[in-house]
Image 1 (cartoon, rainbow, N blue to C red):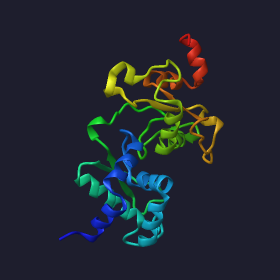
Image 2 (cartoon, rainbow, N blue to C red):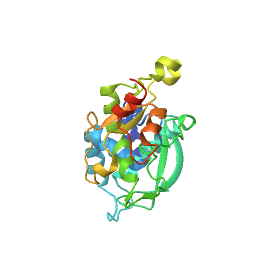
Image 3 (cartoon, rainbow, N blue to C red):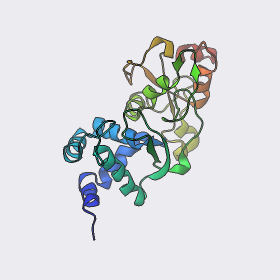
Image 4 (spheres, one colour):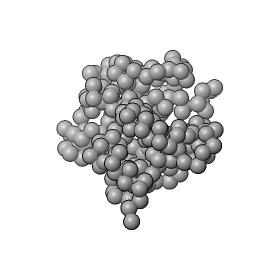
Length: 229
């Protein structure tokens, strides 16, 4: 017997639409909350239909099933069909309807665990540096939509050393790059809205580490001068 809810998933979000949407996360882990946010931004008509049918949900909604629950069902549905891998639960954002949220990945075998200040997986426990927590840095640059728009504009080539991973490693390196925020944490606050083209730049992991290695963070231009670019 066909589950009516699953039939709705197939009708609303077919494989041909789901696959390119989650591809915006590249190979990074993402939560159900991240996926819901992505739908709101990239597929607002989907989200409106889902929210109209199941309700907004979130913290304080006091409902057993909501648009966020349906988002989880979508990921479960395509996970059973091999399009995404199911990962562990982690602490949920404050606005989430429960204390934990499930994480997912397009392919768990391709998750890179080289974590830098701008590349931290959301939900990981972070330490404080002075009065400001590092999570404020990461929320801006981990936004999959902002990240992808940065790469679409600047291309997947390091803005410092000009390394292109696809040119060096072939298909295995295609699209691989880190994204760095040009403005230091002290120059922006929690209300900062990121401009993916002006504020974010693609950098390779080595240059990314050098940009962040000391408290007096270098600019992209300063690091280019050091290596003679």
